[in-house]
Structure formats: structure tokens, C-alpha cells
Length: 115
Image 1 (tube, rainbow, N blue to C red):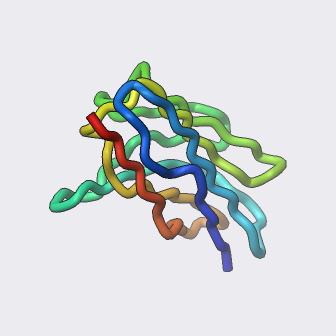
Image 2: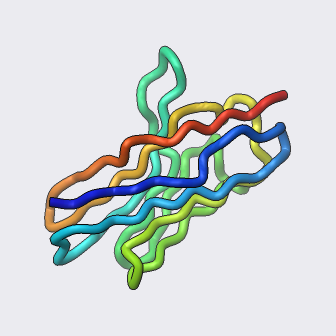
Image 3: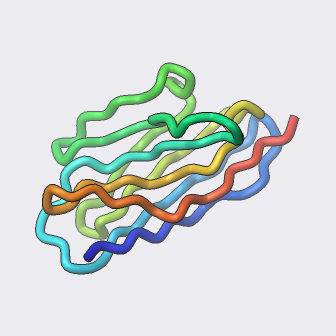
């Protein structure tokens, strides 16, 4: 079983920055893709950014140039650096990890951007 612990959410003014972290622990043999998704009230969960085991990244168009995803394989941790935050970035952000061919989700962390 794999556990994901997220941290770094909070309240920030528009234009500000936050850094999210998600650490995976448990009986893990291989972690492949790691990523971040978000869900705003009344909306479907959407992809924000993903990073493969080889380091390739994919971003939602809405966050390109503002958000950066990275990972530390030694720590089984994925990060999301969020800059130039906008009110429309307000959502619960969820970490997703593919480990040993299974998908795992974090509990979610709230990000609120005030105008």
C-alpha cells in the first residue's frame, strides 16, 4: 500500500506563489508518472501537470509558463511550484502517483487565491 502526504496549500493574493509537495511512502518498488490535478467547486477534476519517470512534463494550457512540476526520485516526492497565481487557480489540488502499476491519490490540499 502507498500513502501520499501533500503539503503547501494555503491562501495567497493574486500574483503570489505557492509550492506544493507530495511525498509517497509505503511498499513501493517503482514509481512512474507523478502529477497534480485540481478540482474547483462545481467543476470536474482536471489535469494541472504531470511528470514521467524520465522527466518529461505536460502542463495544462492554463498554467503553462506559470507552474513548474518537478520530482525528487530519492525522496519519492513530486513538487508543484506555482507562480503568478490567479483567482481562477483556486481549487483543491490533488497529487496522483502511479506506483507498481497502480494509481494513488492524495487527500487534497486547498489553494485559495484572492483578488
